[in-house]
Length: 430
Ligand code: EPZ
Image (tube, rainbow, N blue to C red; front, side, top):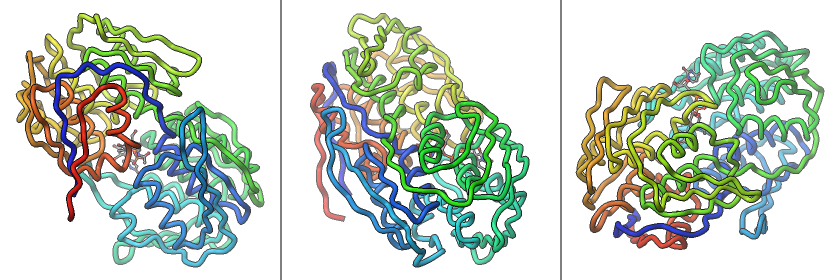
């Protein structure tokens, strides 16, 4: 398994291009299953999660054409998807176990052909991650659902029916799945307490181009009038706000200045406000955001993760890494996932002073210096937090289990090297 070696202590200055958003790309790819016509997605990030979902789509019967493109002077992939007929209606255990987002195929296949079998994903490193909201909502829309041998077997031979659904929690995954299912259901579906993350807005944009009738984009109430069929469309994936936020924190932790080309400030309001409160200069440009921490006199800040537009849970670990070297005390509260402090013991091995209270909050007291160490994390964002700690630490840090980073950060070493980091990948045979 590859490792990443970092020699810390360098100030990062320069430009980083922000890639297409992983968490937008995955539901967009599943949405292509809703039609037998061609759907083209550009600005697709080059990530293992995308490659993996492409593999599942091919198994289901999707033909995929791939080409390299230049978007805003930066290379990315463009894929054209077409699922004329399904070869299989089963999303097997091996796929869903390795990537939960495989469950996005549930809503589209069920609504288009009336039957689907999906392995239940089970829990993961950050929490139990149930699917009850997805399944209860599909049942309300008339699906008959059975759980057998670890699989969800869903049937709706006469199609799904529009209905009024109130989500118990503003789940991103359930909002995407039910939104896609409702586009081809009979009549009107009203979703209340829908998630409002920008990635959902991106999905609504693609579905609308495909002919879906959806009202309420960027609100918690979505009204979908089902249509008979959807058609061909072309769509550019929006920039990754979590990648942008992660590199904004890289500028902060190294007291540098990074131009995040392509980043959208509107999608990062809460985290950017926290950085501003730390005396970091944030400048919005027509082509992105400049984060300048060169002369900042930083002090600890409290954060609480919440549904969008609150502080994103997917930036919590990275923010905590920053707090470990920021003078003063900071309180970090995780409200979305029940087990998302797995980075804490690793940060402490590098010299961080962190006290965890229960499973939801931690007090971080800034130390003068972290020291490099071999570390590993159990999920994508925690792994990036360790990269950040390594960039700030004295000496050498080796981040193990790099496959986590490859799921969500395109060309990580290349991007960090370009702004002055001393970072390299050590290739190792499995
Ligand atoms: C998405 O996961 C993201 N993944 C996650 O990013 C992100 O952390 C999360 O949204 C929250 O923003 C993708 O977009 C692929 P949820 P998702 O359904 O959709 C509970 C990353 O690092 N819940 O919004 O799975 C759930 O347990 C990943 O890129 C139920 O109770 O998250 C959690 O407490 C990690 N029942 C809360 O809702 C359900 O049926 C929010 O989960 C569904 C969810």
